[in-house]
Each structure stands twice: as C-alpha cells, then as structure tokens.
Image: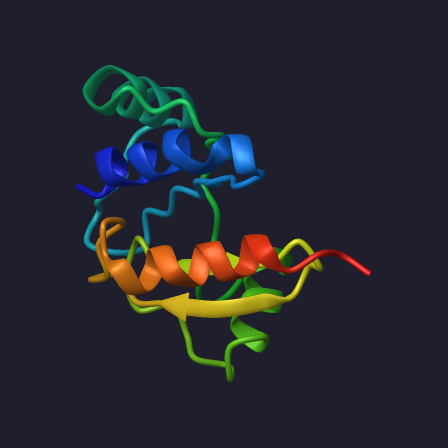
Length: 123
C-alpha cells in the first residue's frame, strides 16, 4: 500500500502548504471495499493516515466524478488506470504533473514536482 508513503510525504511538507487528498475508489480489483467509515478506519488504524480522506469516488467510466473529469481532461484525457494515480496541482490551481499508480510517494521525481508546484505563487 502507498498510504504510509503518502502520509510521510504529507507530514514532511504540510507546513509548506502541501496537502494529500485521498479519494478511495473500488473500481480496481476490489481494493477498497467496505463503507467510507471502514476505509477510513483501515487507513488510520494500519497506516496512521492524517491527511483528508473523502468518500468513495467514481474515477472512471459512467458517473465519473466532476473532479476526476477535470483532472483527466487536464492530463491529455488519459483515463485513470489504477488506484494511486497522483496529480500534482500548483497553488495556482493548475495540474502541474501526473504520475501513474506505480510511482511510489518516495520517488524523487514526484518530490521534485511537488516542490516545484509549491514554489508557484498564485496570481
């Protein structure tokens, strides 16, 4: 699971204005079954997650959440291929970079993209 790495990244950078927003989706191999409360309890109990977790979200196909419609449209329309796709959004509200689900939170390229996004000041 990538929750531990995302939590470490969040704790390390949150004072600089960085946030991790978790959107559980059970559209990929039944990885996040259960209720919203059960998913949250699992993430907190097993990985000590403190970043915001939202309700289960439709991230592909019919009923696509408006947020994911915008995210996908901002990244060349490429569909979400699996859980843990990461979008780096700057302070200006623009998607700066997208990382696939296999990119680990510890990846130096992800960290670089986050730091670059944090450096962009809103207009």
